[in-house]
Image (cartoon, rainbow, N blue to C red):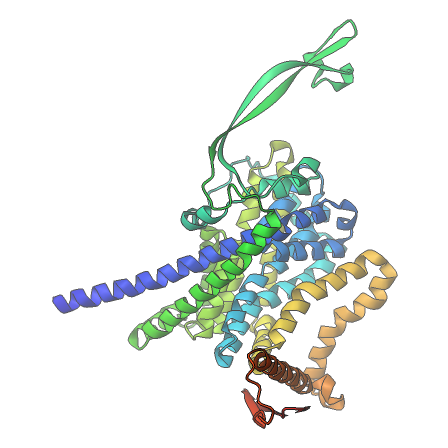
Length: 561
């Protein structure tokens, strides 16, 4: 009996350790999102206000992507889009490409989390594979559906028929379960007034001078009706509420008086620092907590979940149904991913956990792919909830754009999941993982090009002129397809080595890093007065890169490339 109790308490403590690290990991993601919003939130909102750019569908999709990357939250981006449609500033038709772009930008968080594993090549390659299936699924869906939508308007037509067929009533926002839990910690660090971003996006000049940092957590609004003078009867609120006496015109208007009651209690509530400075303070802090908690979480899993326990968990997570129902397991995983994301209201958190679990071998790639697709569907619930809180006169348009977000992901699943050989994101993610395990610097190149430089170039090409877009943008659009074709038919060997392999680039980057390391050591020795004139630096430094070995020879006076 005592032995059983001891085992029980030991297991209980292990579970508490795992849940604690997971909790701090989720909190760090919340703080990271707040930091990015403080640094770039107003800039992102200003981008949304420029309506002329948003009329270009390609530019609009890239705006949605870049804004999501800037604020680290597709939920915020889609909420802004829905609110813009709700206020009749954007039409549903022009907002659809923006929602597509926001969906792609949401994948950056789990790719950033994957960089935390760069120390172990094998695990890093697997985690990067698990993370990039989300990126690739979103990108491939955008590349297929954006041109299709511009030609056929199928998303617009489907969602319009749905919203006009059903009588849907407006409602308040549903509470976010995840925010309720993490708020115990994050609300003491920072709280943001997200209405400010929405107001800036709507064009409010007064909101641009407001701080995103929330000061008052409890306020009271008193609405009264008051007679006020207006220049002419045309300025009256309505014809029945308009009176004219001599040269004076009166009307009855609602006066809203807002009274601050309770001040917030977070660390920065009384700060005199600007939003940007606070954001840059929180950014490294959140990244440090994120890295420490995630690595600790995975280390505990690796250490504790071994033997029979690990085998049992793998068995149930990767469960397969007996023939002829084997195909149902994947769809069940999609449903589980959607429901869990619906509950926590954050696809970033969910997918950021899936990738490391695949990296340590707890789940297989097929199951990770299915869960990721489900999470993509579940995250659309945020936009739907925001739409349901819209005014009655704009509820239909707001709900329509939210449903466009939902059907974009549904059609993506139909394209890239039911037929096994069409699960191309898995194939390409494996290639990316293998490449990254061999050349770790490639992960940074992928991240910068895939989420920053690439979208920025497409955006610039699309707003210059249609001619520039055709002659410069189309070749870039077809470049990935050309590369896939050359790989498939093994034609790359006909090209120069620097074009067909990353090895020459790897040698160059490694040599530069070795030179920098040697220069740093030399400067450090000079600063400490310990440099010996006749001392030579070891002749050979080698580092194994998976299947290849990079050897850099260096001396005190030179480094051989």
